Image 1 (cartoon, rainbow over the protein chains, first blue to last red):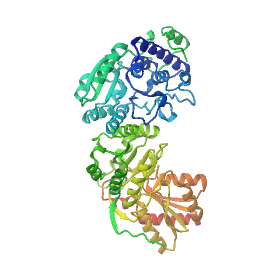
Image 2: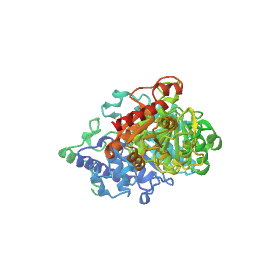
Image 3: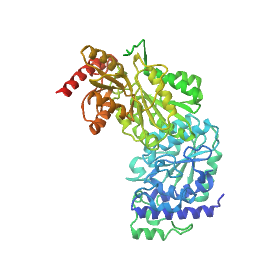
Image 4: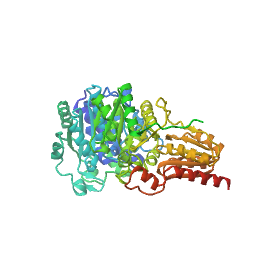
Length: 281
Length: 319
């Protein structure tokens, strides 16, 4: 198991990769990717039992992760590469013609680590429920994880799945909401207020935890707490407070970097704030 | 020449119900899902025998389709079922992303397709579902013609790995195919040979095509009747072989002309063997309330419409 310093150093490199990938193709979604770098790093390097050397698309005998807000693909691709699913050098192909690293994740290009397409929002919680049910049917005790944007919760299907998971007692599922309060058109509060998220999930029958998604120690501790809350008849959701653009000062505190790429000067300025830890691709 | 005799009538959805039960007994990975319509989908016997392999999703079809996609990751073979309207149009994006694009082994099983749903009217009478599903890469589209064929198709799709759309219906219709048939996905069946015109029919219209064959015979016209149960992939060789002989075509389906079987055959022939075609289908018009027979008559989906279409297309060929 990795210590917190190691996890932080992986997350730092992941943040560099995100900036370089999005800059390299002048498209993609850096804001949410930067915000979730600590969480995805913790999942793959500390929390989940995974088998990157022998990836099987329909594998049951390991923990599973579904990225429902597929637009933050850069953070997932970077973590998967550093975890050994595919060569780190392949990050340079992100969003380019003939790449396996499509703009939004897909199994169609046979990229190890990806089991389900996402991008059209709101479907990943249902998918995670299905995968978790299958695990119960075959008595596999591994867990299923999913990540969702907060804006994504405006999709009705999320709440169909939230009702379903509780009604079916899917207690081998840990879902996380990236609560950064921002979406393409502005602050979530202005675009379409989510109301009291904690109360909503609780009333749907979930165990609700909260964490600071940009504090690695808190992320690891809360995910471990979530694990200890599985198997109790209820699904678990973590409302994860993050800062969109975390790690790059001029990308924080605004929704403007949701889906915009930095230019050369901005890229240089951003990278100056993010140390090389594992080496650039 | 063998005449097809219908000793008995049954709904095709009951063929699905029997097929899924038999398949469930053969393959423990088969699971079923439904969205508050288990009676309509004839799932009671499966649920009674395999209660732990049935997932009641409630009235939440979008969730049902994506849950089905997730189940495949544990190597389950999910059969997600509802009315055709709610199993396709309502959940198109879920099918597109989580099933077709992700190429998951999900079987979408849809009852009450087309006009013969009857009195519920146009909100429930989907006639664009074949088109919606056939436009999706990776998707197989099947519309069987009677109880026995639906049962055989249900079993066959469980053995095929990949996304499938299986479309069947509500009313009791003649049973005229063999109970022992082996269903081959993508393989057209020549029910009657003929030389003047080829009638390609699918679903409930196949029986009407066989009836039309007899009437045409009395008029001195020899019609070849081909059952296209698999609309995608289309059995192009069978189409080519027959049309090279007859040189004109009638298509018959309980579906819109846009996106249906006729559209697939016309596209294939336009590119490979242009001939005159008449289409018996609903043309760009929503359905309405009525009994199935009344509606099929009103919308021109009956035996006499096929006869007229055959006469018309032969006249065009000979003009």
